[in-house]
Length: 165
Image 1: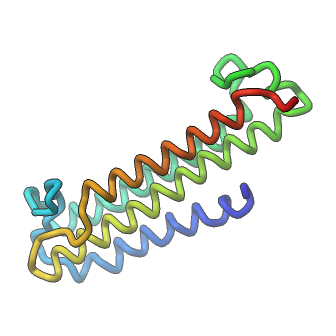
Image 2: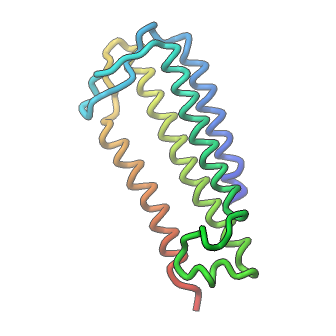
Image 3: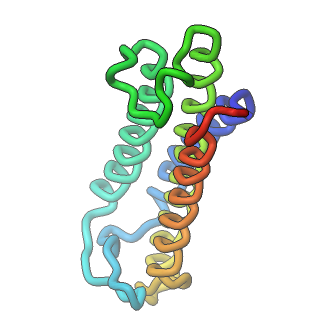
């Protein structure tokens, strides 16, 4: 799984950056960028600032998550908070444990990039169709992301809660 996520995560990052470039020239000069839970626009910014924010958010999250995935094996054991830490970070299991943790971080990264691809597509559509309304319920989309990320984290907690018998 980690190999697939090592490929998928940067592809989603690249797709989000290309999305910003493609949308930039098609957006109006004044872009609705903030929406209430009903999906109505209630905040605006210039097209240039919106595109810069889009790219900045994507690059910041990508650097933070990939950095975390790569930094894990270099951290001292005291800085890693896992249940049964002595077992999971024993020399014979250390590499596999860090690979599993990196896969979880990259999976969360893929979920976030998918969320931002969908979110920025919604912002684009709301601006080019003239309604300045999101077509998907914002609360449902954000709630879905939070539940899914929570399930990934809970799955990791279950995985590391007890050593195998």
